[in-house]
Image (cartoon, one colour):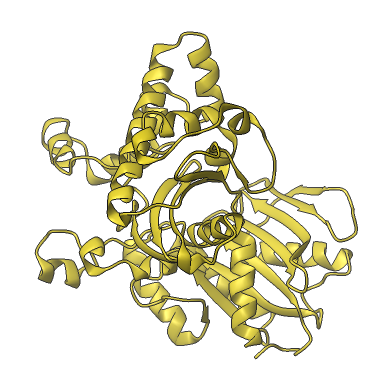
Length: 405
C-alpha cells in the first residue's frame, strides 16, 4: 500500500560505494521531474549535480564535503524541496532502489522488510562491491521516510527464468550449492525494458517475440529472451563473465588465474583487479572509450584495431550462440552507451551473418536519435534495432506497480 492512494511519484535511488544517482519520476505520465548525482561521497571534496526538469530549471552544482550516504540523501532532499518536490510530499508513492544481486530467491520487485534486508546482506559474498552500498542506500532512505514503501528492484531478477541447464556451472553440485556458485546475470532491468520495447517496435506482444538484447556500455552483457522471458545471459556469478567490456576481460580460461598465481606470483586481489579493472578494451589498447578507439583506428593505430576486433569477435560469437539457443530470432536489439551510439560496432557485429537473416542498412545505421528505431533493411528476416534503455523508468514502473496493486 502507498502512503497516499493518489500518490504517483517514485524516487529511484542507485547507491554506489561513493556515489548516489537519483531520479524523481511521475508515474501518471512517466515524466522525469528531477535527476541528479552525488559523487565522491566521503572524500574531502564531494559534488552534487541536480537538474530540476519539472520547473525547467538549470543544472545546479554543489561542491563541498558530503560525509556519508545519510548526508548525501539529506542534500538531495534539500535540493528537491527547493523545487517543491520534497521527500515529505504526499505525492511520493515509493522509493525504488536498484539492488545489484538478488540471488535466486528474489524474482520480482520486493517490498523491503527487515527480513528482506537480511537476505540481501547474506548475498554480499557474491556481490561485495555492490550490495553493501545498495543496503546503505535503503537504510538511509528508511531513516528519512520510515512511513514510505521502499521497494528493491534487482538486477538479477529478470534472469531468474533461465532454465537450470543454463544457470548451472559444470562443477561439483555440493560445492556450488554451499557457496551460491551459479550463473545469475546482471543488467536485468535494462534487458527487461529493451526486450519489451523491441516487441513494441515490431508491433507485437512480448510473448510473441524472441529477442537477442545486447547491452553495450562500459559493462556489457547479452541475453536471449524467448517470449518475454530470459533463457540465457552472458554474465554469470559476477558481472565479469561474458562479453569483452571497457575494463573487464569477459570470458577467460579459469586456468589463467592459476597460471598467474603460480608463475607471476600475483595474489588473488591482484588478479581480481587485473581482470575487472585492467582488462577488456583498456587492457588491450589503453582506452575504454569506443569513440577514442575508433578515432585511433582511423589514424592507423594497430592496438586500437586489435581491441575493436577482439570486442566484435566476442560479440558476434554470442549473437550466434543465442541464435542457436533461441532457434528462431525476431530481432537483435542494441542498447546502452556503445550499443546506442557506436554505428561501427553495430555494423561489424552483424557483418557476415546474412545467412542468419541479419543485415544492417548503412544509411539507417548512421542516423542518430533518442527513439527506438530499426536499422535493418526491409528484406532482412531478422530485425536489427537500436533501442535506448531506461533502467530508471523500469525501476520506477516496477516499484509503482507493486505499491499501487
